[in-house]
Each structure stands twice: as structure tokens, then as C-alpha cells.
Image (cartoon, rainbow, N blue to C red; front, top):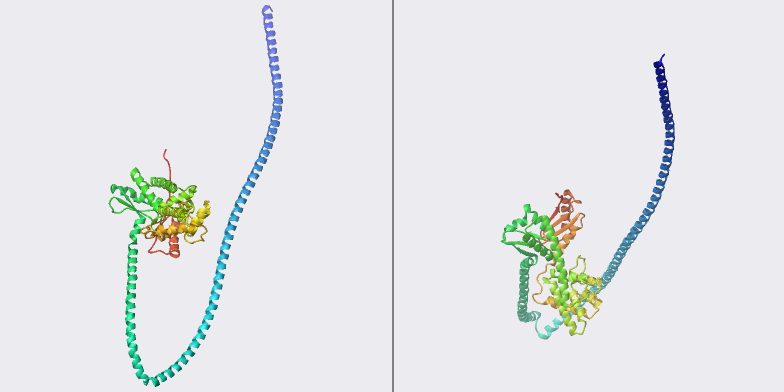
Length: 539
């Protein structure tokens, strides 16, 4: 129990104290951890409650904002709906008003027709009464004539007896003398009849000669039709013909469909024939073909592009021709649409006479005549230029060209004297101004000039337009072209609206309507063209 024992005890006591300190520290740490966990859970719970309250408040705010926005949107939609309803209502009222006006106009027309029919019936009944009266008078006169004839026979027998007594001749002898006298008289009458027959034969021969001449003109009128309906496109070599036709005829079909002109590629050396009655279309086809041949790129898409550009160029040229004509004649203040119609006269003929040249002649004649008579020369020249404006409208209403021209002039605010002169130059309406008879006289002077007019093709053109309008009346028809002098009708339909089976039925329906509703020589071929295109780009 020396020093080592105390040393060992001291170490043990020290170790015990260190252990207790460590245990105290560990206990403190555990206690602090427990307290921290409790506090942390409390704080976390409070935080979650605060977040929940904030989220609920935010959600309520979002719902409130959404309700406000929905209310605003609802009001806006209601306002738009009301505006749309009012717009549709106004459009409907306008349509109803226009239809009512049309119905009223038709009713007026029907009333006028009924009045005319009633007047005709009254005239017929009055004529029947007059005929009945004439019949009764004729019967009375017939009976009176029979009675008179009987009296004449009695008097004749008495007279014959008196003549036999006076002349000392019997009736037979007198008859022989009378026969001889009648023979001599008959010879003289026969000679006169022979002379009359010879004179009548001369007249008949003249008529027959005129008939022969007319038949000859009719048989040779085809040459004049060819001159008015055919254009020749000259080419350098025949290799170009193959390029114009294209593979399986695609190029020429595309060109014919785009222009409405029949392209004839035959054995004619260095020439392609363009056939069609519309001179504007022929000119478009000729210029487009020239551009294609010059460019060298000939395919369906390029053909459509060039034809569209050429149409635009021709329209510009028409306007330029109208402006140049107006400037040359010294006419001012003419409406642009009337100027365009004046330019269209360049491509229109009337009885084989160019309509623009005819109108210029009439304008100059009218100005000279009005100046000599002391009238307004400017108005007369204006009316002379516009007197046939009804022959070149964009549409083709069933009205005389004089009335249509007058309506166009009134539409574009022309002077009333000019409008009356246009409408009255063929006696369609009553003349109310001094320049109206001048226009009529100058029109006759221009048309009566020898060589001014040739064989007409108006009936052909009208029939072609009727063909095209008949086909356009069907749904799904996009374009129509009457070609080959009306012997063929090509109908271009929309591929989305018309199927292949419907295209066949459409061709049959159109041909049946043509047979039942139109009059035409020979036969008309109806071709329905349906094309489907798919376009894609490689990048």
C-alpha cells in the first residue's frame, strides 16, 4: 500500500470523473436534440400552416381573378355576338330589300304583260265582232247578187230577142259573128300577154340571177369566216411543233385550256394555226406562243404563267388604245371604264367592220355635221364615239345594244343628250335632243360606205356564248371554252367538287341540254376536263 496504490486510485478516480463528464455531455446533447426536435416540429407545423393559409389565399385570389376575367370575356363575347347579329341582320335586310325590289319589278313586268295580253284579247274580240259583221254583210250581198243575177238573166234574154228582131239575125248567126270578133280580140290579148310574160320572165331571170349570186356568196362565206377566225403563227422550223405539242400532248392541251383557242398543228410548213372567234383570245394565244417559243421553256406551268402575263398585257393595251383614241378625238372627262370599253372596240367587229374604226368615223362625221348645223360639236363627237358602246360589255344581257349603251352612259354620268342619242340611234326610244338624228344619220353613212361591211359572224359568236353560259350553269364548273366554230365545248371542272364519275355524268347532261335547248348545225362534242395537281418542294 505504497505510493503505487495511491497512484492507481488517483487514476481510477480521474477516469471515473472523465466518464461522468462524458455521460453528462452526452445527456446534455441528447436533451438538446430532443428539445430541438420538439421545437423544430412545432416550427415546421407553424410554417406549414402559414403556407397552407397563404396557398388558400392565393387560390381564392386566382379564382376571383379568373371569375373577373371570365366576366369580362363574357361581356366582350356578348358584345361581339350582338355586333355580328346586327351585321347579319342588316345584310339580311339588304338581301330581303333587294329581293323585294326584284319581286316588285317582276310583278310590274307581269302586270304590264297582263295589260298587253288583255289589250290584245280586247283587240281580238273586237276584230271577231267586226268579222261577224262583215260575214253578215257578205251573206246579204251574196243573196242580193243572186237575185240581181236572176234579174240580169231575164233582161239578157229579152235583150237578145230584141236584138234578133232589130238585126234580122238569129242567135246562132250573131254567135258566129261574136266568135269571130272574140277571136281577133283574143289574138290581140294573147299578144299583149306574151309581151307581159316576156317582161315577167326578164324580171324572174333577174331574181334568179340574184338568187344564184346569193347562193354563191353563202357557199364562199366560209372563206370570210376563216379570215375572221384564224390567225397564223409562223415558226422558224418544224422542230418547234414537237415542243409545242409536248409529251403526250400536254403542252398543247394546257395552252388550249388556258387560252380557249384551238391550236392546229398539221403538215403546214413553218406555221401553227390558231382558231377561235374571239379576237382577244386569239391575240393572247399568239403573243403567249411567241413568248414561249422565244424563251424555249415550254411546259404546262410556264404556259399558265405566260398566258396570265399576256392577258395582263392585252388589258393594258386595251386601256392604252382607249386613252389614245380619246386623246386623238379631243374628248375630255370620259370615265375610265368607258375608256376601257372604247379600247375593247379594237378587237370587236360589227358586220365585218372594225367597231373602233367605225366609231371614230361616226364621231368625226357627227362633229362636222353638228358644227355645220350650229349645234354642240363636242357633245356630238362624244355621242358618236360611244353610240355602239353597248356591243362591248363585260357581260351579255339580253338587251338591244343601243339600250344597253344608253344604260352604261347613264351609269357613268354622261350628258342626257349623249345618253338619248345612244339609245335612239336605232329608233329603240324616242329622240329628245337635236344631236340624236345626227348620230343616226352618221351611223348609216359609215355603214353604207361600199366595202365597209362584210359577211356577219354575229350568230356564230352568240351561239358560242350560249354554249359557254349553259355549261357554266352547272356547279363545280370552273371554265368553259367553245372551240372549232362551236363544234366542240371544253369544260374545265374543279377536281375537289367533281369526281371522275360525276365528270362523265356532267358531259352527258350538258350534251342532252344542248340537244333540247339549242339549235345548231351538225354535232357538238362536249369534253369535260378534270385535273388533279399535287405540289411539293425539295429543299
